[in-house]
Picture: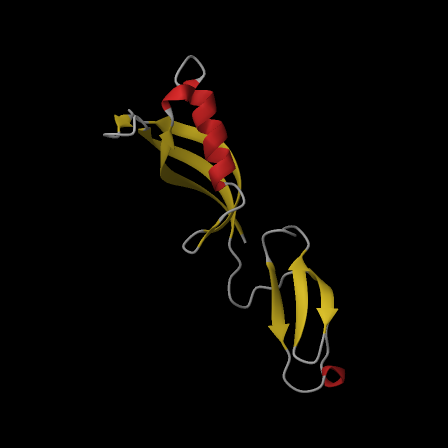
Length: 124
């Protein structure tokens, strides 16, 4: 199931990125760090769709890095127990079926344990 939600993250930025395009560099770093990751609570973060707000930066002592609270909108994919997903079987052996989900080749990979004989089972 796909959801469009608002999340918040504290982003650290090196002082060399300070300048006119500070916000653009912060957004680019957010996209690089967040898109394609998995959160146990929200699921797979597919894409960032917008930035709601960037808070005031806080300078970290000793390093010069600045931490910005960023609130952003994103699309997440979270499969639920019992949900039917279309997948491609990549390998079958005596123990398991290995598969990947079509839409998220790099995100949702796994295996399905097989107990008994594969010939007895019905797979759609």
